[in-house]
Amino acid sequence: MHPPSKILIIRFSSIGDIVLTNPVVRFLRKQFPGARIDFVTKKEHAELVRWNPDLSNVILFDPASEGALGGLRKKIRETGYDLIVDLHNSLRSRVLRTFSGARRVRVVKKQVLLRFLLVAFGKNLYKNPRSVTDRYCDTVRRFGDPDPVVEFPLPDDIIGTATGRLIAGKFKADDRLVGFAPSAMHFTKRWPMDRFVKLGIALATSDRVKIVILGSAADAEYCADIAQLINSGAGAHCAEHLAGKLSISESAVIAGLCPVFVTNDTGLMHLAAARGARVVAIFGSTVREFGFAPRGEGHVVMESRGLECRPCSHIGRDRCPKGHFRCMNDITVDSVRTEASRILAASHPHHGDR
Image (cartoon, rainbow, N blue to C red; front, side, top):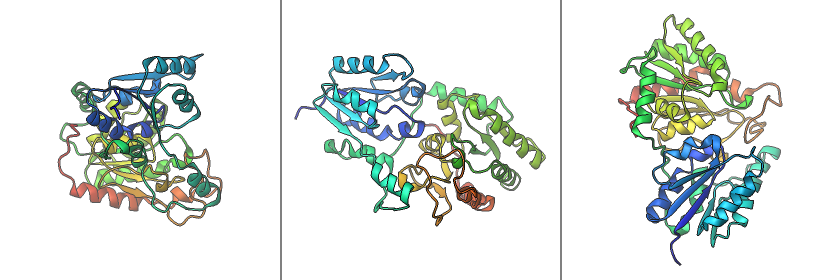
């Protein structure tokens, strides 16, 4: 069998899912060093793969643009890819791969039935839960054994710009940082605001750290309120928010400068882990069986085990269907602080220089 000379990887969204494709990209480049390796994703996620040195081209897809899917399908067919690796396995990606003319197509197994049975009926048939990264790697195992380590490589200028923005604020270069990612797209994936505030005050006063709060532009007001409340409670300027002030790549750099990063189940969680931070991840309505626990050593997942109503969704909900929100409310500030302080005590100077 001839090695492929043109390879296309498909993953349209979202942040965490795209970050976790990194081992597949790296493996394919190692196995086929002379191949053209392209990656197709939605245009709003371009920055997540733009700086990857193992990719030849990033192809942007805008679903809001009329005729975009048809145009992309034509472009793929004209390019003549030998191998398509579909890591999304959606209706759109099926259209692209079906009419691609590729001799070989590899498709991720999403375990949709297992997920449905767990969410809808509470039947946990995940005998050996595997991470999404491992399932991605399964698609290319016929070519070898991929290294599942997730990285997020960035150029030096991005690292320098992000670090400069941090120091231009109220922080000093030698401050020890703890990162917070307190927001999430869905309500049931957010640990309550007051818990993040109390945690920030406790860490700032007892562990003598500074708190840097990250998020998107849509999270800016929420994150600003948390920073203000932490500073008020601590009686000093020990917290600052950068939500909406940084690109996603710059946010990843800052997250990687933190020995500890406390986060909900979000894309920033995966970026922080990929940049080398130790993550304390707070899982509410979602569970580790879905495969999205932070990848790597030294991370901690905080969750309310034993709740019959959990998980109620694989992506999150706008409200708790039971009304009590115990999946998040049962996770105490002290329990999260204990884990964060333990990691801080064991941490060494961390430069996030990958």
